[in-house]
Amino acid sequence: MKMWRITLLILVTVASICLGPQTISASAAAQQNGQFNGLTLDVARRYYQPASIEKFITEVAANHGQFLQLHLSDSQSFAIENNTVGQTLANATQTNGEWRNNTTHQAFYSKDQIASLVTFAKQKHVTLIPEIDTPAHINGLVKTMRAAHQTQLITQLTYNNKGYGREFRLTTASIKFVEQLDNEVAQSFTGQQQMRFHLGGDEFTDRTTVNKPYITYLNALAKNIQSQGFIAEAWNDGFMSRALNQYNKHIQVTYWNWTADEKGAPGKQRQKTWATMPELIRHGYRVLNYNDYYLYFNLSKKNIKQNNVSYMTSDMRKNWDPTIWDNDNDSSLNSLHNIVGSSISIWADKGTHGTLNDEQIFKASKTFIKQFLTLARQPI
Image (spheres, helix red, strand yellow):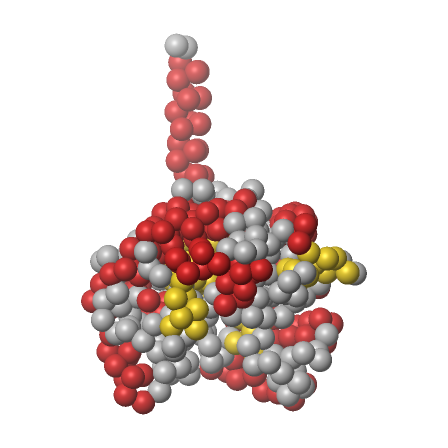
């Protein structure tokens, strides 16, 4: 090899070493601590027109956010076309762009509508994240299955938890069924940067001891969705301090509340046994901050009034940052280490939002969204 070629090769190698670490792809940048922030929209308990969801995506993008999470299943509804549970366009009616199950009358999104939303989100550089909440919050899903004459499956796979309603049994049969359900949903959300799939896992038990069947259940669902290129996410409720070496460490934990709002002696017991966000971080988990005190926008006529939105926004600005994880208590965290990002959530679980239209909700929440996304990306 001639000397000038050797010299050129050395220069290129040195340059690549020096410049390489400074060149960070958009995907890698989104994984940096505190830089993956967005909005969770409850579309199961309140239907939004696809055009309205596009407006929320645009708002997230305009304020440097990275994702919109769709809470697609809950006790009231299962909000997506899905052959596994028998919710198909053949047994539904479309009116003004809105699909409704002919038997349950639940509104849902067709696979074509989801595909269009994913395409739109990609154009805005926003990741659209599906959430299929199990093992609890499945009454809407069970209604859908019953309408599709899947009664035998319902009996085999689910039971009635007196405190939390219908739930999947934590069995191998349930795992296989939910994997099939998740796989079908996941197909509609592929081809994105930072693909994520939220597996649920909130408000399903009062147990404060290690729940081995749930660990097996969650780990299996996470492994299944990860094999398809998705990052698995789950709510923090099922993560027990004494068992943090038993969960799939690649699951990213969306942390909303230390005790799931349980009060009195049961709440104190949960504080002793449920993993705190700092504990999860110390054990190597990556987490996202979904603080239910500062970051929840619960829909009602009262809450969307300007003075109330202004108070919530001001309170968040003065008192919250991504290290504040337990309601309004002081945090022991002093850095963003392993905090992937944060999310505000617009929930519709109070039953007092029925007369509100999409535009009212969008206008009322814009300031809240903008302020949050500004706070979320500020250095600690």
